[in-house]
Image (tube, rainbow, N blue to C red; front, side, top):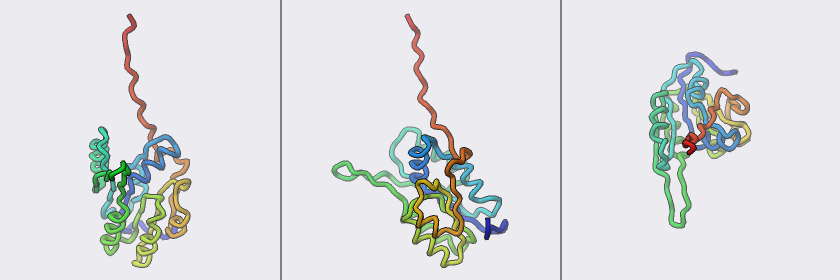
Length: 177
């Protein structure tokens, strides 16, 4: 990795929804965020790691959020907005961008874990402030503009170590009479 130095101060910013839905749609799998964090930091000095989530009142989400915290993420959450007519919205684009901008003076490298092209201007801004910006995402669902703007793109496509199979519902076992 050109520009990589073991003494770099790193901040990791994970767009959980983007990564979750990319893995589900592309591979019918979940993301192993522990491995993402470990490989994103890559032995450098981790200053902060943020995971941005949207609460959708799904049964297992609280245990998932707790697992993210145990991995070392500062979990930022907001409720899913439901508008009149049933339209739903929940994203953290502005919140993630603001946290990255605020933390940039304390970082040498920013690891953005998302394929969302809306972050292209953020990547350019962070570069202008002297931060190396690395993007980790599935190339098949990543904006080409985001890839071009990044100093380094870590393609997660086809790398099974970053995926976990979804748990299948347990089959009920009934006794036959």
